[in-house]
Amino acid sequence: MRIATYNVEWFATLFDRNNQLIDDNSWSRRYDVTKSQQIAALGTVFKALDADAIMIIEAPDSSRFQSGEQALENFARHFGLRQNKALIGFENHTQQEIALLYDPLKMQVSHDPQGTEEDAKIPSFDTSFRIDVDVDSEPEDIVFSKPPLEVAVTPKGGAPFRLIGVHAKSKAPHGARNKHEEVQISIANRRKQLAQCIWLRQRVDAHLAAGDSMIVLGDFNDGPGLDEYEKLFGRSGIEIVLGQSKAQELRLHDPNARALMAPRRVATPASARFYNHTTKTYLNALLDYVMVSDDLMRQASPQWKIWHPFDNPVCFNEDALCKALLTASDHFPVTVDFALSTLPLSNSS
Image (tube, rainbow, N blue to C red; front, top):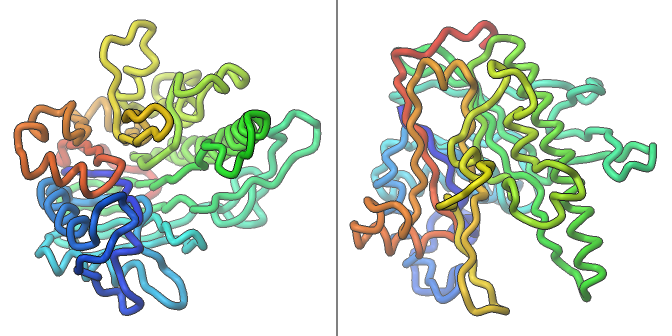
């Protein structure tokens, strides 16, 4: 089975109010890319991925005006994708949903959120989480602008497992007017991002205690050693979600994250590529992860792949795919393949 995560930049703007693709030569929100070009590129990428389920970050908007699920299913129908059913959990107000596009012949899925608003320890992801993030002895209310998507998966011919799709708080200092504000906003955003990761890790701990096999995946806007502010807090949000300080059986695993934490890094994996207007160069960063529970790591032989157009030889050598990856989004897909038949039985799914 292949599971993927893919952050599609401004996917929502490719659809009209009737959830139909705007397949014309008007400009997309991607720089110097038309809607038609981005749509064609996305079709090429999704076909090449050939994943059984794709956790889409920044999926089309769901609101009283539009249906993100219908938009994605129309997209799948347009390209004849076998991943032709969509699932969205808690809707948000950012026009950037978290959605699962999946092959219904390979699995049954359901939105299965845990916790409640009254659960003070691990509340539901569409509510708030109280934690003292600025060390002033007064807890703050932390919320997800994009609540994680919790999915119960029953694959055909395999044991159930759980997916949690994540789009964590961005640490970028948007709105800063000077260096002082940039520092203030960056630190405040990092505190919120870490708090979200602590909240998420508590949900992971609950699932592991229940014996659930699980995969946590998406865009965490973070990585070990990614910025200088990490030194103020001692660890990254990624290390918190992975459970690096916990016993082996309670950890999540992602070799790309582990490569960043190695004391001597020769090559740094990257899943996103951004243009720096100040230096006139491109910045590569690892922001997208697929983390698997220890039971899957031991028994399902997972294999990871970042579909980077330059760093992955297969993507680089296929000219059409290489160009499509660069045109479709500023992030690149990350996949994990695992042996379905060896999945352990989950205790509570």
